[in-house]
Image (cartoon, rainbow, N blue to C red; front, side):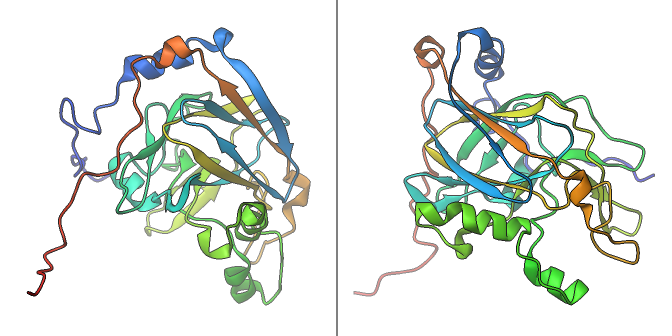
Length: 278
């Protein structure tokens, strides 16, 4: 086993990485005072998009048992600002849980949501090195599927997300690298990406606080709970292990938000070393 090594991006007191845990704890511990304003289920092998206002909370739930969900998120008022999965991996980790944040792309570079609760927070690291709520991998898509299998399939997560965002004026080109909710992944001894069966049970959830107005989209992965292989010699149609996902959106008490401020975009105002000619 290799020796541990410190992370590259270290937080200091008062920095943008120094999370106000007391504030997010107050949100998590005041569930009885929040108001449910919308809830819905996303059927198997489909996708749906929805908006959440800054200062609201939303949950992704597993209402009927284990199911992986591929999640995209944008600034609802400017979709050029969206989840930057690779920077989030560097700042937070390859897998996320309570107090971790999803960060947006350049030049915006700010947290767009913060995780406030996670019913699977104690999953930890399993015997294969797997962890839950994955940022290592990306969505399944019909293009790689065609290359691997020689067949077309129109309900991979990339396609589900594409259909989901069309009513909001977005296209396939706006779909981006995902957060794989309820998905257990890791790297094996050959440094190859692996996926394992989701441990989620009926009633499990991952909860987010919206730092800005956001547009979210979620695909119920066609691989279901990932307990059956989708590619390779033992591949089979995993529709038997597909289940819906749920979404709940909550309004918080104004008192909870009295000292909260939306994060500003990065204040960098340089010109990237470019000099203007007279």
